[in-house]
Amino acid sequence: MEKFKTKIVLEMIRSLQEIKDKIMMDINKQTVNLTCPECKRSISVSLKQVADEVLVKCSCGQGIQLKDSNGTNRKGIRDVNKSFKDLENAFKKLGR
Ligand SMILES: [Zn+2]
Image 1 (cartoon, rainbow, N blue to C red):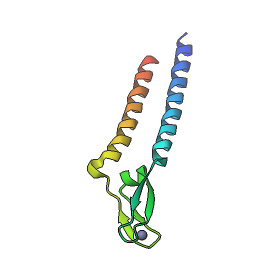
Image 2: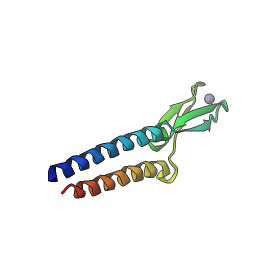
Image 3: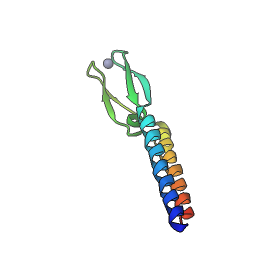
């Protein structure tokens, strides 16, 4: 019975990690559009790039420094990570 319980918990944790990976992938794929201050062309950047505050380059050569205002995107990604970590810990406790 104990072994059975452990197996179920391990499977739940594995499923949880798969769901988390999928959500993270989706978050990373979300894009926002910016307007180049130089040529006014629309540039598409991913939320992850915004969270990482990378320097993107427009096709006209203009560099644009992304800014995660108040760390909103970074915080969102961290919150999702933390929620999954908490769930995982809750599952691990069940397995004991
Ligand atoms: Zn441009």
